[in-house]
Length: 268
Image: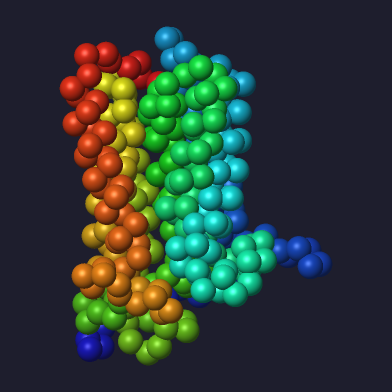
């Protein structure tokens, strides 16, 4: 192992506390993502011909937020803690113990968008294309929250970028949370922002989101430490990679399908 590595910055996960109540950086990161999504969605809704009102933006983001929380928790329990859930189904409700899954949250958001599309007589992809560019900032903020918490660290590395995380042993590891912050947050946001600034075929923006996130997550998982109780699964892949493969395939299919359609969607 190289003796040159970065020290983990000792950032207190708790910003401040009042009695038993504590404000944590991780929770603030979720708030940052939601506030940014609200701001960007209202900004896009104000463009001529967007077809969206501020009330509709508030509604779809509220339903989407519920989808993230409910789906994220259910996905974590089902995908990553199956045995514990089967032993004690009430474990699903123990949200104070932590545990959220992006892939579960995505499924929750999809259900919310399907419901909203039906309620407002919109096509599903018209809603999904509007929502997709709003997501990466929240993803990036969440990953930065993981980094502050010193959790979800990477695999052992002898590279000079390695970092020793508290509770992860003496060996330097990939700061994979920062890789995810950069690719799933910053880069994916830039891709979707500029791609959605021009009219695209219905479903193309959603397809790019799925393909982009799935590809970034699948790649970064090679540097991320697999969950201890699961390890590497089929073909030596992690659970995160197995869940990202369908996203990549679906994203590619959606984009190919979108560009074969004659109709072109509005920017929103």
